[in-house]
Image (cartoon, rainbow, N blue to C red; front, side, top):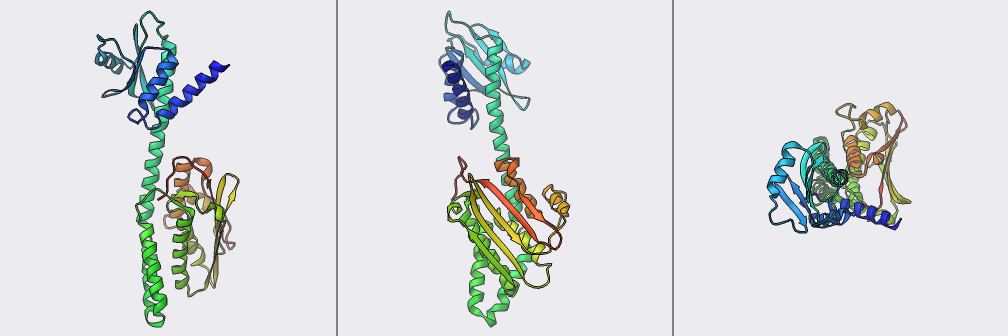
Length: 345
């Protein structure tokens, strides 16, 4: 039983060592673990350009380039004791090779054993590529969201500031500062994650600009539990939802409106709720918006945020929308309070 646990531990650690791919800083450590797992004298991990990491020494007369060429040409296992090699496949594409060499007079790994370990390494590399792809998608979506800052909002904000210059110069100066802060935050390129506190501050700045535009007919309630303020969340997650609530909920409502932003801890989760008492929408329309098939002019920010949350955290962490015509809209965000490897700046 102890031996089985040790093998499972080595398997898990090989995956961890290859989190940054074959060219990561721990690929040599991964090669060492594979060597220990198979009980061989040397291990080489190679990509299509040649050897990348190795542990142990191959015999002096080994023509490693010829071994790699044969594996890459045929895509099959090479076996000529004491040397064995197996292809590494990521998404069914040849991406590298695992080469092992048994010690003199020692047992050479069976083809099945080598294939299983090669599959283990391939899966680790596949997970690395998947994480990298998710990061690229999230970054692209964030760039898209930055590019979609509404000209409508910019025009209205500047018009409100201009209107207050003569009647209330002090407030005009404060609003101009708020507007500058809003733009600085929205176009910031520092980091992919921010704290809830930073996102909340940007959201409050946006809401103050909107309240001035509504002639103070918009009421704002912000309630955030202190324990979630340092939680890291993806950049521009809360503010686009608030903007959607104002544009598509309150702007179309006659009379005053109310919007609330609240957050609290729920076990291992951070929960943020954005609710308005605006015009609402049909639940079917909300589902279409999140699916990316809703009207182009409506809910673009919602679909973008939902996709980024699912990309970063997994499919179970998308937005939840509760709405009905005439009954306002409530959007709920749930994300892990702690996520390894996330850095805020």
